[in-house]
Length: 128
Image 1: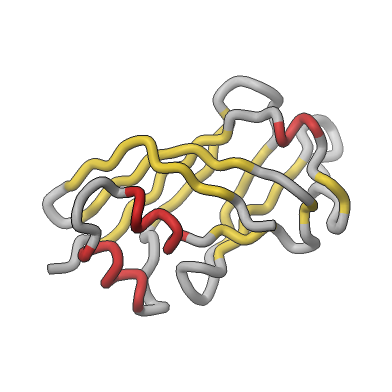
Image 2: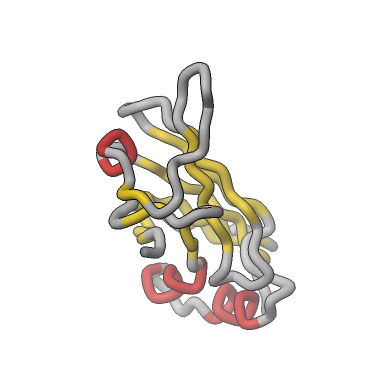
């Protein structure tokens, strides 16, 4: 199942758009990471999202920078893997501790992950 993104704040810069929010994990963790669809945030931006929508229509675009972090909860580690299009990025999830192993593909997310408060930040080009 894809990662659900929920926008909490948008900062319209001069040449860039800064988007902040939370990510929710559910279901099964796929081998190779769970899908992140950046196009899913277009309707949540709270303004005419033409700039972001235009930038995501071209596979060369999408976020110029993006990251996931954990706010409290467990020290699981979440990394981004850029996709070939804005709707094919991957969230790679790893356990903390000595092994630092990736979550088991094909298995349900561990409760430590579904209980995490995961935040994201993403920077998009502002097209005019």
